[in-house]
Structure formats: C-alpha cells, structure tokens
Amino acid sequence: MLVAAHGAPRVHTVQIDRVRFVPQTIEVRPGDTVVWRNRDPFPHTATGAQGGPDSPVIAAGASWSYKATRRGRYPYVCTLHRTMTGVLVVR
Ligand SMILES: [Cu+2]
View 1 (tube, rainbow, N blue to C red):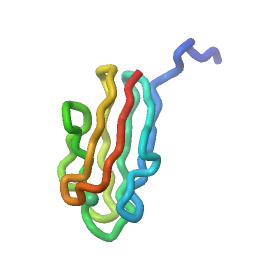
View 2 (tube, rainbow, N blue to C red; view 1 turned 90 degrees about the vertical axis):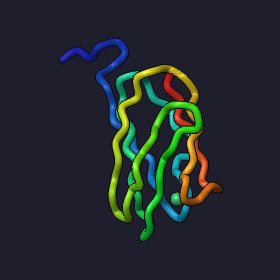
View 3 (cartoon, rainbow, N blue to C red; view 1 turned 120 degrees about the vertical axis):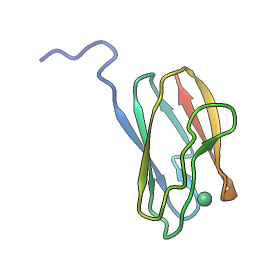
View 4 (tube, rainbow, N blue to C red; view 1 turned 60 degrees about the vertical axis):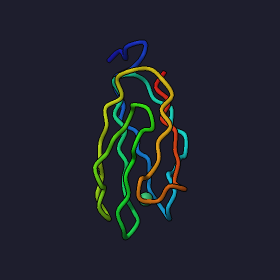
C-alpha cells in the first residue's frame, strides 16, 4: 500500500514523569494528536500560555489528548507546578 507524501496523522505521547514533561519539546504536524500521559502519583495540567493545549487537571495515571491544528510554537506549563514547562511545535 502506498503512503501519502506527508503521511497519515500520527499520535505522539508526552510522558509526565517526576514533575517533568518528556520530551520537553515535541514537534508535530497539523492533524496530529498529542497525548499527555501522567505517570506521576499526583495531578498535573498541560496549559498553553498563548493558545495551544489547555488541559483540565490530568489525574494520576490518566491521559489527555489534544489534536494539533494550527501551525505555531506553543509554550505550555503545568499550572499546579509552574516549574514544569514544555513546548509544542506544530509545523
Ligand atoms: Cu504539575
């Protein structure tokens, strides 16, 4: 089967582990989905500063999915632990 030039939409995972987003910067294409998976035993969020992801509280062990649509660079934080920062790049 032939694969389209830009490929089908993909699913990417950001692990939330030990109060960090891993990887800290993730690059995806429009139409891709990003899943934040909380591996910590306490809640976190993934909250864009200016657009981009805006999760509810992601409970311990839970995941949250976001479909990237608009191109851009979207820094985000965990609003519960402000030292946790990440960047979603949609290009
Ligand atoms: Cu947090």
